[in-house]
Length: 359
Image 1 (cartoon, rainbow, N blue to C red):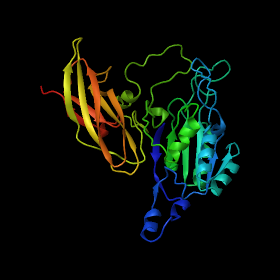
Image 2: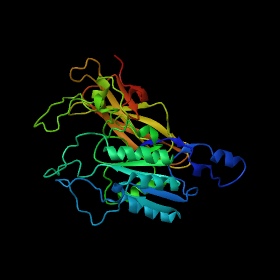
Image 3: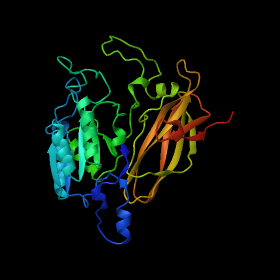
Image 4: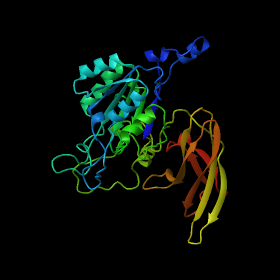
């Protein structure tokens, strides 16, 4: 799962103090919506028909048959009950009813996205490639209406690939991509939303700002060739700014990095080199945090005159509360580059350069 947004919001329940004096002023200041604080919540609305679906993916060759599936509604209801919350559900089909429930609850988890009916190999009568990266119009309108009714709205998206969220994502403080989360997905999503676990996922694909920034797409083509310039490299080559870049993902709090170092260069007997890089990641918060250190190499690709960054290695690490850990990344290269870049995603602005050789 990937946390894409987690902005401060001044929800009414955030102003409910759990103490007095100076702590009241601190607690009433705007803070990120997630993780949800059950100590200040009395009620939680779960909205969207996908929340009650066993939505675990395709009905084609990748279909699986787990012995049981925990839906998002079941997971959130169970977690809410443990915290003494009144968890209430609406399928979202009737927008006015969903909005009324949102107004009546302290916070909202709105579930939308895709299912096997929209994408995958299930194409005998329906399914196959999506015709658009947008949500259906009803879901976009539902998100807008619910977010207007309750500022403490977290949207959870389900599906197998990117979505275009430009018309609504700035209107919700929190956005989580759950993909098809599997048989225990309901518990996993609830654990993350309530802070039992920390978000450590990163995007394996680029989320475009709009469909106009994408290469041509022919849904019913028998064959098509894109070459190396697609995804994040296409975005970079065409100077497009994505909504969420490849490799992007948030934690509940930022972690700090030291300057990266070159640990070793080993020439392999079969040819090529193994380059070992390291960076120290520090977590000053009181809860664990995750980081994915990504290594990129500037390469000449296709017809693009300027070198483009290509992911050549990554390491995922969990950093305990109030501690630091060294994270090493191993990179395999045919020839030694001058520089390898370490960063948090494919955005060049996030990278630290590590000098590998001098010409």
